[in-house]
Amino acid sequence: MLNEVLRRLRSLAELISVERVRVYLLAVAAIVGVYTILFHRYYPVLEGRPISWPESLLFVMQTVTTVGYGELLPFSNEWTSLFSVLMMTTGIVMFFIAVPVLLTPLLSRMLHGTPPRRTARALEDHVVIIGYDDTVRSILESLRVGDVPVVVVEEDEAKAMQAYTRYRGTAHVVWGDPGLASTRSAASLGAARYVVVVGREQWAANTLLAVRDRTPAKLIAIVDDPAFDRYLRYAGAEYVLSPKHMVGRILARHGFVAADVEAVADATPPDSVFRRPSPHGQDLVLVKAPVIRGSPAIDRTLDEIGFYPKYGVEPLILWRGGQFTVLPGGDAVVDASAMLFLLGRAGEIADAIEHELRVPGAGDRHAVIAGFGDVGSAAYRELDARRIDCTVIDPRDHDIPTVVGRAEDETVLKRSGIETAQLLVAAVNDDAVNIFTTLMARNLNPDLKIVARANHAGAVDRLYRAGADFVALQPTVGGQVVAGIVLADRVRILLDLPNGQRVVQRRWMRGYPRTAGWLEGRTGAVVVGVEGAESVVVRPGPEYTFREGDRVMLIGGVKELRRCIRLM
Image (cartoon, rainbow, N blue to C red; front, side, top):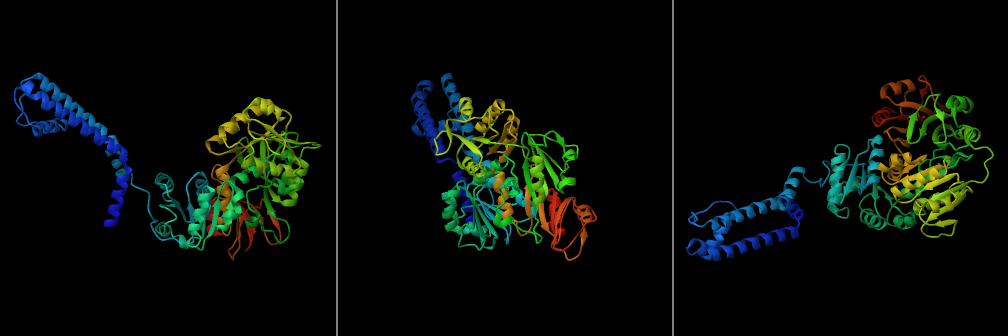
């Protein structure tokens, strides 16, 4: 108890700036000293009575603090009264200065409290996330569907308080240094199933070294530069993920349509985690397929295209200009800004892409990549592997076709061939630059396919309004990948939608059969596909009966999907 009181007193003392207190006290002492000298000098002259130094100091302190006077009243000279009024005013001003300097931080701390130093109870089989930023927020949102206990450990008090305020009731927060044994104990690190470290490479390595021998958990590191992969694995990480690298691959794969499913499938899931071949050799897959200008699907309705009648493929989601429609109607029109999420067997999706989405007679294809950092270089490698000619815009020259300059410069854009290009990848590490580049490129080439990265959620809508066809939000990508790893044995997350809905796959573990209609009625989720031991069914009817071991694909919100997981 005494230690806790002392700790709180120390934290309150640290809250008040030592320098500000020193300046304030020196100012008070100077004012009182000057007033005492002046009063001792002029009181005998004005009032005709002698006064000692202690009496002068006493009078000044009584006046400045406004506590009242004693035997020196009444005054016979008005200048003495005016001097007293001046000292009173000074005292009041000094009081109002003291409130913001000294009292406001203390009162704020007393009213708002501090982040927790430990979890309310001991946890086990949980996830510990060390660090707090946009990527961590995305991880927390993605993990909600799995109903897994999560502890966020953050060393910075302000960030820990933000996390505690935002996720109180849904996640535990521990304020402390993860390198300290007390913090690790407070987060039940020794009983955790996964530990996720999010931050710069050097900091991540130090943190991994501090925790790797203190927990049996699998360690995941999320960093900017994948070049440090082997060092972080040496420090103890089992998975090293770079959202920037993944965003680059995703952007490239959204730019052109290829005949094989793997080329247009989402680049996010690590193959070692998510590939689960079905026994009959036909996986049920969900593929993002961009619609390119010149494609046979342009300006046709889904009924006219006939994905399901012709190929047995379900257009699960239609994404257009940042807006998406789940299970779109047959009258929905496909245009060049659209992205289709196709659900079906891999071979049948490949046939649908080849006949309905590929541009017939497409010759040389040219892509412009604005920015050649981690995201741009990953996009270049992906496009180059597809034999797509690329021109990079970057302030530095590189050993590939490069236009040296800034992407937001119209002259530089024209020199890169933007007016005849088929694709622009806006990959600069600055949302404002990507927005302006998108705006200019759309004006210079109205038929251009534009895909862009965004570092902050607020930039996504502005990029779409500037003319982007697809935007990848970097923190969201990292969150989805981590959730996919952590929840792999519970539920497979295929897609996170902006409105909080998700497309997931969950194995039916019950020993007794139930129908798709029963599950939908009990949970509110929608069954969109089933991968069984002997068959794959797209768009099963309500009478379809699940068997033990079936992998069921569902779409719904967090609450609906949680109910499904419990019932399945």
